[in-house]
Length: 223
Image (cartoon, rainbow, N blue to C red; front, side, top):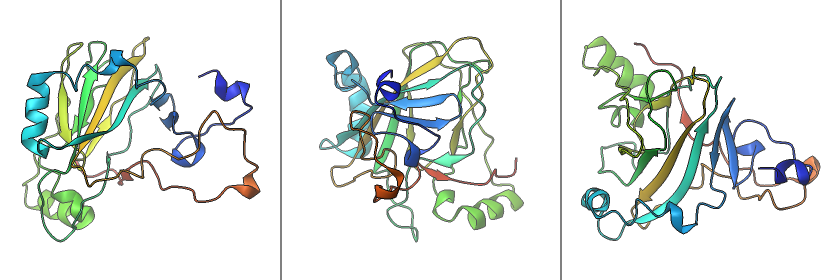
């Protein structure tokens, strides 16, 4: 986004140092909501087959709380393990209240950085350090998966699952459309800041109400 430079903004890594139109999640890894309201990006909400699955999980009244483009540029390193949002109740397992639908715009494989996930880890992220170590010691952890995806295919997962984007060791960007659906009561106030790139830069001493980090990040769990 040229306006970042045109406005005289500086942009770092993480929600606190970015804008609601674009966040640098990691070095060379960006997530952009800029112009995602265009009709060209309505491909998932208008797909009956995909929405049938989404509605069966979240209900017919679910809403889209985010549409974005995640671009992993060449040189992007593997992310830390993380979940994209919190549990509603850390004392018990509840049904999915928020999920991501990924649509890769290029073929994705080990070279340009698939999304790696730990199946069955949703319940572990309620109390990760204790639950993860217990599962590890009792050999109940399921093996990680990093599915190769064809351009235009679908990857859908619960917001709370442990996952990470792998390194892009190719010479081309790896763009992925992201649609986040949620039950109507859920509000995500963690993944994007409120300040806009279109606003004039705010002096550091006048900044107020910084939001939290973009996701819940965990120390690298044991293999």
